[in-house]
Length: 280
Image (cartoon, rainbow, N blue to C red; front, side):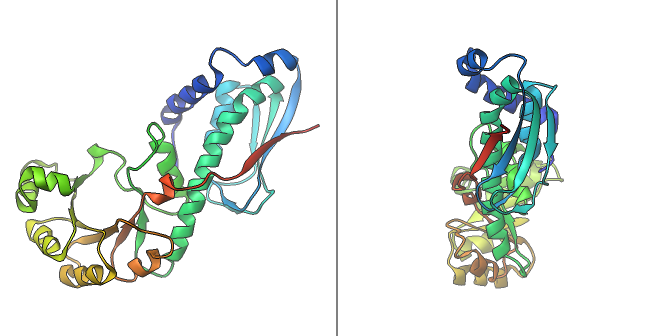
């Protein structure tokens, strides 16, 4: 999902600009001459993994299609502090009105991609893949999930409509794992896989017997996860979830699970430190 179309970006960017502008920019419109032309550059103030350059450029072009935007890096690049990401030239008022929203998107996405890459680096040499979750900022899901892909993860389902996960409350409401999965198998489109959340080894066996394609191991110990791998023996994919930390993700992968999902690469990611500087 790292390639977002203008159709997807435009409403997100429009809402952000409306939020920032309100009914006008007193500072810019009163102290900067209307015909003033300027050039500015965005640099990073720390080591980062780049994400969101296309989004930042789209913000600037939305504010003023006459702005000239030159991108000096690629999404996914690792950059050292003080590296140049982007230059923009044109009317100074337009650049100033785009500055904060462009930096907000870029700083958020670079922060997520940087945090994600740290997790992915820990999985190097294993067969395990990192997945994101639906724990995203309301209204920002596409942007944030795009950043995790740029950081090296894979998207889990984007919304409720593009995948099936039978979680604890579904199981309780449906009367158990077997009846829940049975109803899904009867009516679900055949292109969608069924994932079942489990909390112990008995539930793993029940989900396997019911016909689950993917079994989520929720907050299990390393020993339980390793036993689940031996129990399933490749008959379903296994996803470890719950309490995943950078310090533990490698050990979880070494149990033999296929996927590890975590929301921390999004909800706990720190924004990257970026700056826009006007040329004198």
